[in-house]
Length: 292
Image 1 (cartoon, helix red, strand yellow):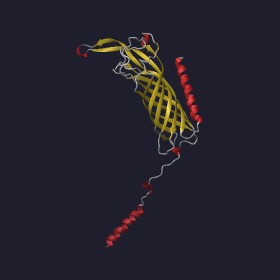
Image 2 (cartoon, rainbow, N blue to C red):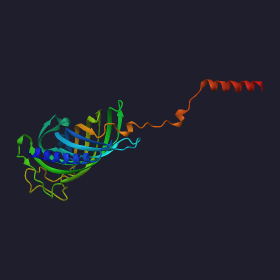
Image 3 (cartoon, helix red, strand yellow):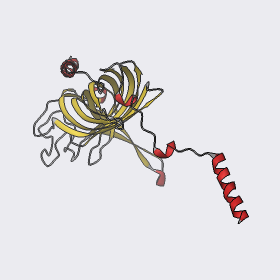
Image 4 (spheres, rainbow, N blue to C red):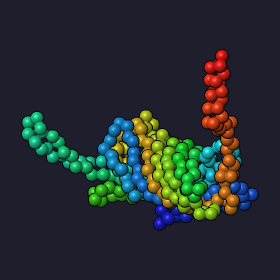
């Protein structure tokens, strides 16, 4: 229920922003797009810990794009508001089995995992170059963004219910609510009149830490089961890989200005080569030279 409460809050914010943008005068350079998808999340701890990808995270969002009316400018700038599930899986406990003999003796570890799930609100500031194909019915794009984030809530669990799980209680000395990072991605959209339907893949690369480092929060001696670390990692950024379906609306029936502005031909391309004139001139010059 808490998860759907967070989604409801984000959807209300999305609708409010979309209504504000749509109340302005619509031009050919504005689009609003709804996105929804799934993917995986991963933590880059330092010092290195036993971790693995946490699959099944979801994302929902709304995007606004502004396309320049300059015919030679290919691309758009915009802003997204996105609800993103993040997290990590950390091997907090393992059992060992030794196999082989002599120099071939090696240890095989079987890990038990702690899973941390984080619900975040993301605000990417996006630049999106794009190209049109199939008579302007297919748009292929890449994008890069500076991402700001705020962690709304979190919960945790242990594999096989070995230890109790539950709601993760945020502590100011231990946890960071705000974050930042970079993202990059690519995708395509099929254009049907003013509607765009497409797909995109995006990777969010976190730079900020989910937890404050051990210089600020050294040990978990006063914590409960929510903190599985003996000592807080020095670095704890979170990455996300998401695959999303998109549905967009373009506020103009005619299309983007760049579709209808033809580039002027270069002066060199206007010049033609007349073979007969050139061969005639060459013959004339040869005859005159022979007469001399």
